[in-house]
Amino acid sequence: MGSQPGQQPYYIEPQNIPGTPVPQATPSQQYSQYGSSSQQPGPAVEGMPYASAQAPISPGKTFKDTGPIRVRRGFPPVLVLILIIAVLGLGGFAMYQVGWLQGPITKVQDTIAGISFPDWWPFGNKDAVPPTVLNAVASDVNSAGAVIKWQTDEPSTSQVMICESTGGCTWTEEDKNLVTDHSVNVTQLKPNTPYHFTATSTDAASNQGTAEGDFTTLGAPVSPTLVISAITVSNVTEVASNISWTTDKPGTTQVTYGTTSAYGSITALDSALGTAHNVSLSGLSVGTTYHFKVMSKDSSGNEVGSPDQTFTTNSALSTSTEVGPEVGMHAPDFTLPTLDGKQVSLSDFRGKVVIINFWQNVQQSRNELALMQDAYVSLPRDSVQVLAISWKQTPAITQSVVTSKGLEMPVLLDETGEVAAKYNVTISPVTIFVDGQGIVQDTSIYPATLKSVIQIESIVNSIQ
Image (tube, rainbow, N blue to C red; front, side):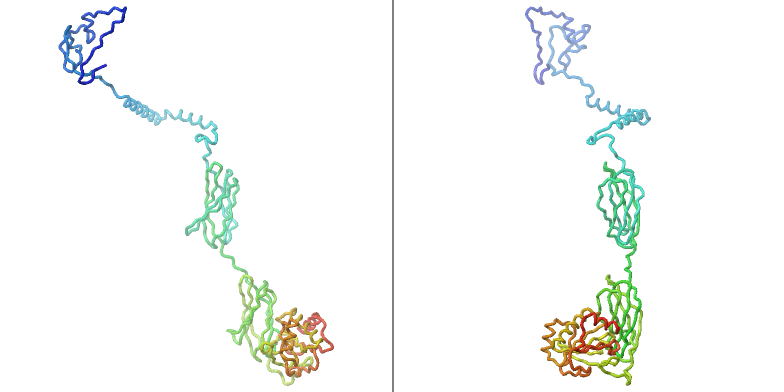
């Protein structure tokens, strides 16, 4: 063990083990402790702890302490290791480049590929091949959607991305069922619009395959319009007419009319949908040509109108035509107020069959009055009108009967009996049937009263 700097070197004498003789060193042996025996000791060298082989130490002489012995060191081990790795790496790279390692590497790969690893094992021969997507097409294309179909070579999921040409894409919800035949409905598309689709399938190992295509949605469907036919003008009088027509699909009923093709007047809309349509026009001018157009609107709100049509009202009555309450005569015209003060004229209903019932607050009249109310409800309003005339009764009495019977038909007030006198009414009830031309066609005078609604309908049908 060497001394520390600044300390004197020391020498440990061999210990004398009891019973063991202590060898005596010869001069040559003493020399051999420090150098070759053939060399002579020389003077001490400064900085050396002991004399070197070129400077042997003479017996009996001492030498100067010059510090600890300096050890010669070789290359550091880390540097050696780096050099070894570099040499091996360069050598291996050179062999790989010339193809010497291709055979061994291939054998190692083949060996690993033949090993079946469990699914949880992070290494090994897992499925890394995506499904092949075939025959991706858009079918059943309409104005708002399509069906995207395709096949895959292995069971996989189904999902489609739809993109507009102007930008913006949406995904359908993924169908996670693993199948080979795929079909996905895409909806809520715009009409007459080009789209690009991407069909996507993912297998059980999460490998994903895709295929793309294009299609264009159809234009917005055009709602079929109604077809109007069989336009007929009937029951034309001096001041009224009846217009009817049919449609191939249910529709509403309305007529616009006037003395020119600009029309200017329009009837109230009958919103009930039907295929047979009928409108009565009243309050027209005598001997005048009218233009009209029938109109119908289907349940979707699509309206269709006919071409312009015309008819001419009758001229003024001939002086030879007799006015009176008898059958075959022109029914006397009149104007009477209702309970609410509205003025109603017989001529307002030209083109319709008008049933005029004169009644008083007596039992036989009340019975027939109830029958008139039933007829008013059951007969078609567009071709038949019922008028109940309260003969020589006060508004109070009339109102009480209307209320007790629940009458809905128009009830007119003939308090003075002036109109009843025109129709030769002397007893009640009296019922008169007038056709669309204003001609009296039938009468019923008490005690030959009407018995049923069927009887009334039969008379109306014979007049029309």
